[in-house]
Amino acid sequence: MPGTTELPQTSLSFEQKLDRLASVAVNAGLGLARGQELVMTASVDSLPLARRITAQAYRAGASLVTTLLADEESALLRYREGSDESFDKAASWLYDGMAAAFRSGAARLAIAGGNPSLLSKEDPEKVGRANRAVSQAYRPALELITRHDINWTIVASATPAWAAQVFPDLAPKQAIEELWDAIFRASRVDVDDPVAAWKQHDAALHRRADFLNEKRYYALHFRGPGTDLRVGLADDHRWMGGGTKANNGRYCIPNMPTEEVFTTPHKDRVEGTVTSTKPLSYQGTLIEKIAVRFAGGRIVEAKAAAGQQVLERMIDTDEGGRRLGEVALVPHSSPIASSGLLFWNTLFDENAASHIALGQAYSTCLKDGDRLTKEELAARGANDSLIHVDWMIGSASMDLDGIPANNGKPGSPEPLMRKGEWVK
Image 1 (cartoon, rainbow, N blue to C red):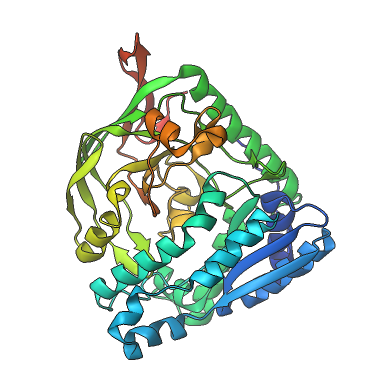
Image 2 (cartoon, rainbow, N blue to C red):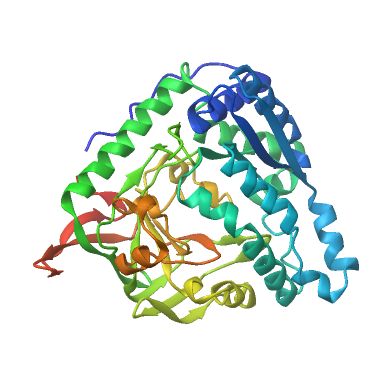
């Protein structure tokens, strides 16, 4: 299977790279249309990139850019000063407004880069309640995103707290410089033609997805240290990778960076044990060394070396929180894995390893999924939940087989990956 050819690197200043990242985010990632509104979310530490994205969006013809800023220190004050009942509240009016904007045609861009351990010392019960309230309030907007009704993308900005987590032994200034360099490399902006680099990479991911769609596997079998997991695939599932054409007609690449091909598992056909290979940063809390057992598609045992209470509350968000909504394949030789860095950020770490996601399924990963009712989606095996949480299970020690369908039943396994790499 052909891969991506490396394009030559070029010498650029930090400001030039930041402008290129903003340009790539708007023009390659988001696919913004002339006259389209943009709703952007970012932290106050990400303002330099947010402002450049705003400029690039207006140059691309945006009719209006609305940026919603979050402040992590203010978020912590809730846990220091807020009343107990405040943790069951969420800004429903804000999320209703975002959903209304998307329904009226706005695009969505998120800048990631928060403190991975922001809430790690806070009361897990309060964290769980607050996360559930947000999940419920955000649900109408999330459904528009997971159905790809709109064009959307996520990019990253280096921030002091995140840089300190990734490079704990470096001085703050050097740490943030190193993190920016890693973001620029992973986002393919430090080459002579970033847009051409993204087109080339996008095409390679589509070729891999096409190969898997031709195979039409019944299930996948993952084997590795602490993992012996069989993931049945949803009826009429579709593999996707790279960019996609949203239902509004705009072509977008939802995650930048991206190295994955992914599809929808069958919510009732997951069996066995699986162990995480990288920590999960979940809404400000680190969950490490996750080990779970599935039976009948549902998690029946769950353990973590750190963040156990948060893990339990996450999977108990609703019935769908204990079932899979996505399975994604990433070779261990991906550029992000090859960097040797643990980013403590799902946007990056999920592209360093094959992964699974608990919770909401992407209806676009089913044939004609955007036209199906919730009941029809469920009948094909698609999971429904307030959450969608990716965590990494791949490594250089992982083997993967595809199991063909044989008259509606499992056939003989075919090797797909060995030691974390594609067989062909």
